[in-house]
Length: 250
Image (tube, rainbow, N blue to C red; front, side, top):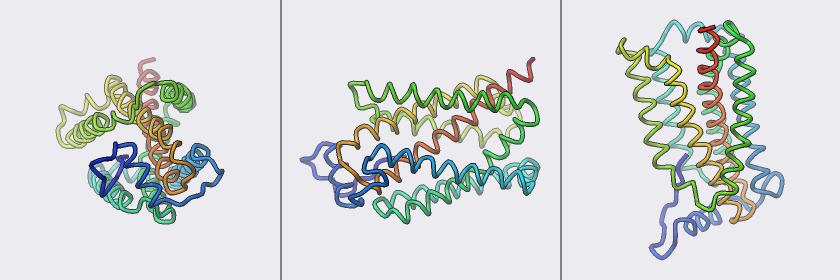
C-alpha cells in the first residue's frame, strides 16, 4: 500500500513529510498504546474478516460458482478491490472509514482465499498446514530483516508495485490466452508470486518500523495492519499453490 502525503513541503524529507501528515490526520491513541502492537492487532482483525469470508464462501458453495464462472466473477471483484484501495488512500486518519473500507476489501479477497482452501483441502490437507507454517516463518524472518536493516526498505515500494502489476496483468491475460495458462499454474509462477509478496512484506514491515518514530497513532496502525494482512493472505495462497504442485507430482 502506498504512502499518501498530500501537500508535502519542499523543505521536508519524505520521512518528515509522512510523520507530519500522520501527526495531523491520524488519531493520537492506539489500541495498545504502541504503534507496533496496534498494527499487529489490526492485522489480526483483518485476517479474521478474510477467514470468515473464506469459510462463508465454502459453506455457501460460492467457491464452486467462482470456479465455473471464471473471469466473469474474478475481474469485477479485482476491479472492486482497486476501487476500495483508492478510496482507502483518501480516508487515511479516519479510523472508522479505514476499518470499513479495509474490512470490505478483505471480504472481496476472501472468495479467492476460500477457493484456494477448498482446492487445497480436496487435494492435500497437509499442504494447507505447510502453507500456514511457511507464512508464519516468512513473517518472523522478514520482520528480523526489516528490524536490523540499516536502510529504509520501504523505498522498495515502487519496485513492489511494478512487480504486482506485472503479476496481475499476466494472470488476467491467462484467463483469455490458453498458452499462458500453463505458466500461471506452474511452480515457477508460485515462486514469482511468493517473491513479489515477500517484497511487499519487507516494505510494509519496514514502514511500520519507520512509523514507530511518529508515536502512537491509531489511524496509521489500521492502515499498516491492512497492508500486512493483504501480504499474509496472498503469501498463503502462493505458498499453497507451490505445495499443492509438489503434492500432485508425488
